[in-house]
Length: 261
Image (cartoon, rainbow, N blue to C red; front, side):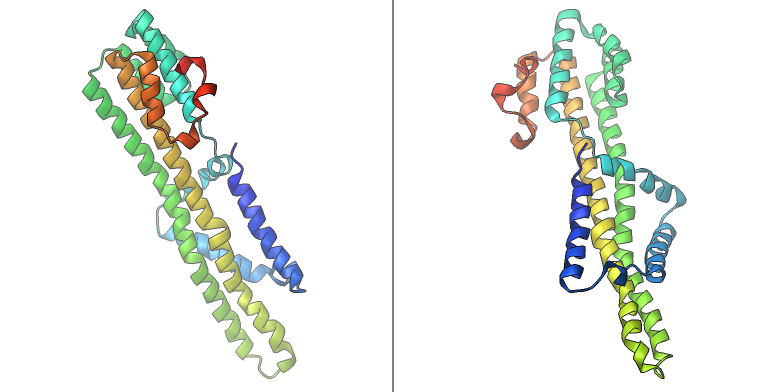
């Protein structure tokens, strides 16, 4: 589980709280229900209006995935592919059908089943590439939704401030109340900027990054399975797959499991 988004958001709000404290203010100064209801409620509402109900549901269903951030390490994928290459080399491609029934990864399962069934390599590549493209397109929906919320929120905050200032101008006859009322009016703009930059935009970027990593994993599996089908030598296959992954995402060569050697 990658806690980057939780740590980042907590630190961001912690910095805000530290600033309020150092300025001699209090957290209650910005925790005003009215502007918060407008900013969060209206932002989500216009985000919904700009898409479809399915987009809205899919976006919020993706939030737990963004928080967990679970991504399979590339070396683990490489080790699995190399072990399958060794099995196919010693027992034949038909032996991969058993591996297909045991794996929990739907993408890998379909690849193994098609290899065991004797699907042509070019057709298999086309099918797997289409599945990867569809997965990437599906993931972009959630990311784009939260990206749009990040664009709407500051403007919604300004709308809230304008509405509040209109109320302030209606009460010029009570100058002793103008200061607190004007300060409260700008809280809507503050929450518009805060929600956009502390929540919606980081969430969109996080979902986009997780999608990229998942697509990289699927691409690594695709190239590995096609090489297994072609009868590649396991050791050379492991080296080729490692060459497809940035060095920072791999353990040192000396500490790589024996399956990749």
